[in-house]
Image (cartoon, rainbow, N blue to C red; front, side, top):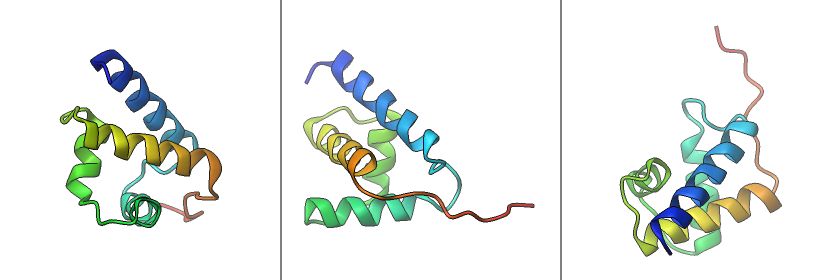
Length: 85
């Protein structure tokens, strides 16, 4: 995957996360649980964060982003409707 393709994928995933209001504090563990279930292996929350920020751009990060995109576009996952004061 080229750096440009990785950046495009990363921005798409971040946009979907924002649209679903999953970019708030406390929502990453929910994304991580769905990601672990879909991949069938444990992904560290730091690896997820590095993939989303673009700090790591390897094939493992690309796999995380592709899987997360499929989860967010196909599966039912949304933010809690909590009131924040």
